[in-house]
Length: 180
Image (tube, rainbow, N blue to C red; front, side, top):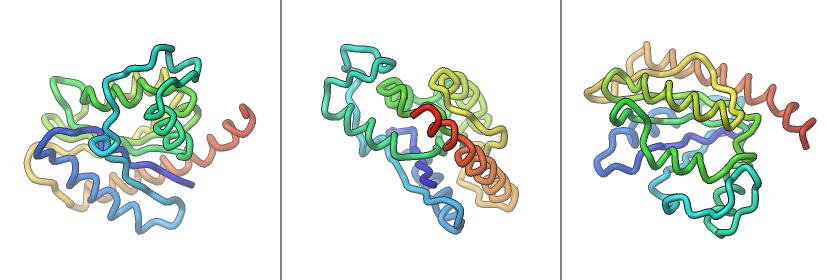
């Protein structure tokens, strides 16, 4: 079972980088899945430049085919998203919009941060992922303003979210097998 931890911000000085490392440190103590970081700052996709909608899977650009191959290899995702103006960052929306089938029938969990713990960003992200046929788990981690707090509550929430995520990702493997 492979889970990508997607760092959904490229902003200079981003707090989400420390959050992603915290998630990985805890996730990598588990034995039920492997967790790998995808930093959208390193992926560096241009603003959507595909002439055909992703729904058709006819990718014209090498960077899109590489992105598709990478995302297709995962069973699930943990999205680390700050909240910008009551939503998630444009770079994350752009990365999602590049693909369609590669996201389908997989599971996702969330770590939101910022004002209000990123709750509104996660709410909007759930809507977009539903259109991409991604099953989202209920439990999410909420980190408010200030320094990253690695307290017991956040640790417990993260483990509960990861438990749900791995269970759903595992169940959805059979759905993908039937569809193939």
